[in-house]
Amino acid sequence: MDTPAWYPDELAHAGPEHRDPAYVAGYDRKAATDPAEDIALLRGLGPGVASVAVDLGAGTGTFALAVAPHCGQVIAVDVSPAMLEALRAKSERLGLRNVTCEQAGFLSYQHQGAPADLVYTRNALHHLPDFWKALALQRIADMLRPGGALILRDLIFSFEPHEAGQAIEAWLASADQRAGDPNPGWSRAELEEHLRAEYSTFTWLLEPMLEHAGFQIAERRLSPSGVYTAYICRKQ
Image (tube, rainbow, N blue to C red; front, side, top):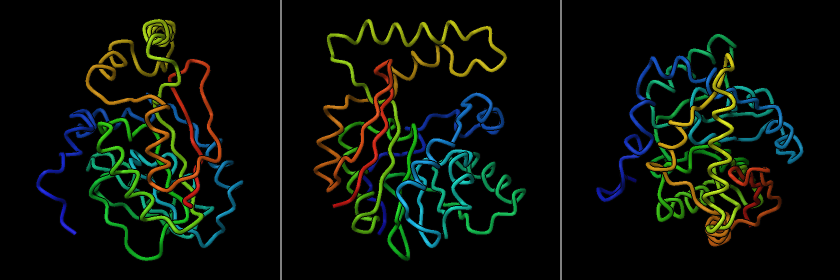
């Protein structure tokens, strides 16, 4: 199916930095993502060695490459050619033969073959406004087998709107405190730009979208800051 002309340009929503090979080259150090907890979650779900996993918004492949030894097939999906080039290079160095890359996004990826047992996405769905999040979640449900799992991690706010000023300022202050570290992560300026230009939402807005798409929320993990939320969901 061709993507309708009225769909957004997902690469543009992801931001120009994701197309910059120089930015991508330093992305892993900056993001400093440890996939160990998510691999433990996956193994607890027990999809088996013949499973099909789809990583939407795979970036440079931190999760896709870590999960490959536990799955039959991993499909790493990202809109950025530069991200996928870095992912392919790492996959080749590791000698992984069950990882394939697809340049696409939440709204354009066309799943082929057996239904997915697992869809994973981390810090990518927030690039879409809420209308498009709802469509993306329905598309995720459609590619999963009944009982299949969605692990969703993102900047999803669990504080109340009237608490936003205090919660956001505390989050930004944590970036200030890391400024002198060798690997400081995202700066205050970058987090402020995220808030202005991207589309993080509230738990009380996202959860009805998940349920309307046909998911049962099995587990919800809230960060102490109220900024990050992780969901484990099952397709009903």
